[in-house]
Each structure stands twice: as C-alpha cells, then as structure tokens.
Image (cartoon, rainbow, N blue to C red; front, side, top):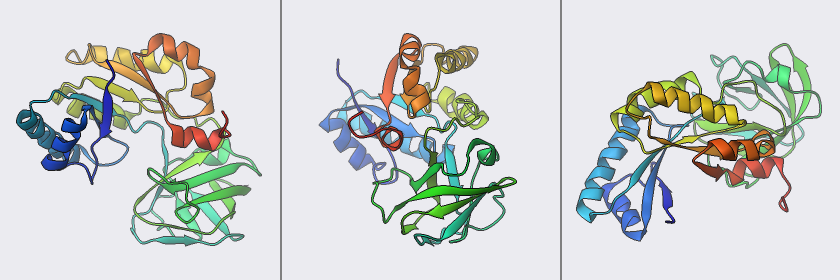
Length: 263
C-alpha cells in the first residue's frame, strides 16, 4: 500500500498542523536528526501522539539520521554575505567565527579530499538552489587543513545551518556516526521507531552495519531500514544496496548537484 511520508519540522510540528497532515493522508512521520536535538523532536512526537489520538489515524515513525553530512558552522547566527570573484577560506577550526572571508566546517579531512579546480556547493538546509541563498565555490588552493576557494556567485547565507557538498568526491566518514548511534539508542529505543532512514548510504555494507547495530538494541530488531541515496557513490552501488535495504529514498537535492538534470 502506498504511504505518504511527511517531515515534521519547525513549521509543521503543532498538533493542529500534524492533524491536518494526517487527515490529508500522511502515514509516516519523518523526524530529521540532521538538525534539532532529542528534546525538540520528542516534543514534536508528543504532538504527533495527540494528533493521532484525536484523528484516529495510524502513523509510523521514521528516524532520519544526520549521517556524514558536511556542514558550515555559524555560531554567530548573523547572515554571511559572499561576493563573486573574491576568496573565502574553509577551515576545520570551529572556534573561529564565520565571516565573509572564513567559514568554519565540521570536517578535518576536507583538505585531503579536494584538489585545485574541484567544485564545492554551500546552501541553506533544504536549499532552493536560488543563487541568492546558495553559493558555488571553486577550490583555488589547499593550505594545511584549510581550503582556499574562489566564490563563483554572490550570495547571502542566513541562519545557523548550511550544508556543504563536494561534487563527486568521497568523504571518509562513517555512514552511521557516533551521534547517530546515540540518537538511535536513546530516542529511537524510547519511541520504538518503525523505520530508520540511513542518510548517505554508499554501500550494502552500510545497511548490514546498521542492521547489526539495531539488532543489539533488542527493541529495534524489527525496525525497517531505508537506504537514502544522496551521491554518486551510493548510486553506483545501487543494485547491492537494493538487496539489503527494506526501502530506498532518493535525495533529489543532493543528487542534483552531482548529476545533470537528464540523469
């Protein structure tokens, strides 16, 4: 039977809105742990329970992991203006404030993964692709752990969370991170989740590893695992992933950065 998955976020977490979503046909509620803490998502889940009771509609719970997502860290929360044809430095030193000339990131291995001429995309979470809210960078120079980039288009980044995507480059980070395991062990077990959406699935082994982890938790040994395909590496190994996963999710936004529209 076809199911409709709805993401419950800041603008869609009230009892009233969730009730409307359930009445409209939502049968799976997605909780996106690439942002927000356990307390935030638990409050949303309590609202879901209230809405389910009042509407008498059934709804499964999906935990979507953060995975090995690269992010720009803006602790100041001030908008960052980036001007075309100027340069900006990407640094793993997260103690430094984000500015128009310096962007702290959450990954120490970027300088080893990229080379001069590589393309990097930075955008707000759930980016629109609009060139005023996202920016394309070209790697100009690698200096120790820092990466100096040429800004290709002017943009203003607003908010605290921006995703960073390096086109067709493998990032050496585990698919199921320590943070993901903590969230699953606490929030996932507490709420007996029905589905685990495994972000940035790249190989069948990622699914097997996640399934082994869930089996050790006892309560979640029947939880379904959906592979979330978000880059070329995952697409290349699609057939083997399909054999292991209970379901497949394609992240059109991230895949669209690596692939031409016709693909």
